[in-house]
Image (cartoon, rainbow, N blue to C red; front, top):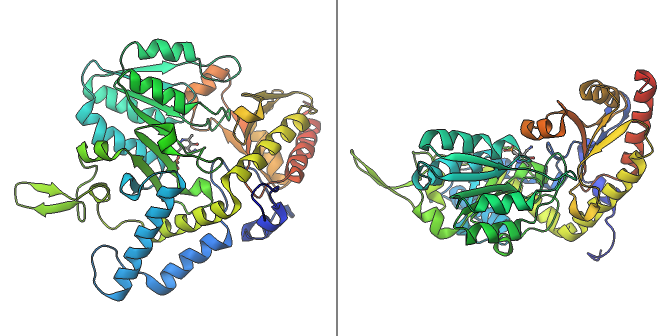
Length: 412
Ligand code: PMP
């Protein structure tokens, strides 16, 4: 299959065993991919193979299993790093995006952010790119500044430029909003932030799974993402960091493997990235993430992105025909990830999601861990349909007909 060809959704779907199951007797229409994605057989098989054949601890044992497990773990690090344009020594395995921002908060923030400094973030962030900086600001006495949005759900770049005049020590911004789907021009944002002297942290949780990402081209200092949102297992993700920054940082957690030598009164640290991987690491899931990267690479991230852009365009056109539906976020598919947030008249999103579930349609309802953004939108919650490679226009049609049924029930 040439990478310029459209994605063969039926072929892709046959790789995902869970898509065969029924929900309330109906075909599962899984549209909650921004929360977590389903796993292809290739990822599940990699986990089973690891536990069936080579399970052993890494970096410790000279026996065959130990060496094979280490090779598989480090091989996966290389693969995942290459996938985002980084080198293996720049990639720290973590539990996910949340752990990555907390790592930066403790290991970089507490050393380099000082009393009176400014930390800049935006109101479209997930809580994992807000709360760690609130905690940091409170701990060191820094000020946290939020950049607002324009009416179309894109970042107010004038406000961003104004915030940079305060010479912030950190700019933390999402690559793609998990609610609005807004894709931020992180390359330009990081370039301006660096000129202003700031260190940059990019939340890539909703970008790496859905579009080609190259951290070197973006020019950020830190970039974070989660394996479970990119067809990989839960409990594994990555923090990519500039080598010199990682080397200058304090450790995150203390324990085995992150040390070079331990004395009674002090210890010295292992090289990067091991300095940040204390204790027994998540070997199986890192290998599973490597398998997910293989799977996505075989499809081609350009093709994943074009597929989702087509679904976004089709959804916006299709759902525009549902009376009483309000959509939140940009409407230009080229500036929007595969995320459609909406409300239906005054129906509570949880009630709506329950009706959709009766029809086998899985969407997320709630604040999506983005309460400052909900406040800006003037709503307590939204429903959100989000796509990945196994979704098709049939899924969007199923969503529409379930919404029409809900309209009838609620007389919306
Ligand atoms: N950032 C964004 C934009 C997200 O969508 C999410 C997950 N919803 C996170 C961060 C947090 O990711 P995780 O729960 O995997 O740590």
